[in-house]
Length: 264
Ligand SMILES: O=C(O)CCC(=O)C(=O)O
Image (cartoon, rainbow, N blue to C red; front, side):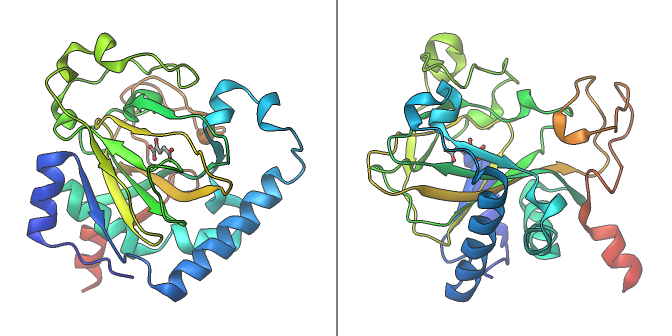
């Protein structure tokens, strides 16, 4: 795994709101991630025999399979890897990283676009350093739904969550975005992309005959507090607004600089 993050990488991330690392997974890693994700997704969704036409508009954009770390040992090993936490902590500029939730995001053939959105409005904590990783398990191209970003949009305000099943014009809704351009980010399988929770991003439709697979994880800086909302991944963990989001069985701390220093 090519997980070392340099000062230059950090500068790119903070300037643009995202950062791309080609070759993050080597061939052996990629094989392991693909096998683990395919098996875990099949276990959860294999019984769903609906055609694309029978799905909701949001489901037509993505098959979204969440928190595989919780009930699937191979996925747990991959997602709780301290190296992922350390890379996210370095880029975000925080001491500790917790998993908020992981999710496999599969754009099947005929899949609709993933509309422009920020991630943070959907979460139960609000923190400018929130960060996600998106790992391509297939080459992601303009034809099958690669990601697009609006560089600099991480400096805009926290917006209202958009309806992910609708294809509204985001620049109509968020005037601050009108002066920003969009960057297309096609990547090879095994590439990792990190983006900030406020960065607006999009993925096109899948016009090919094959699924576009990605494994992703949303991270929460350690020490973040609840914003008063509740997210389904929390289960019976229902902190009040302002209370620490620190339950390790729900939001595992996968990296802490302090913890590393204490062990040294
Ligand atoms: O994979 C996609 O199509 C969208 C990814 C995304 O929205 C995310 O990782 O936050």
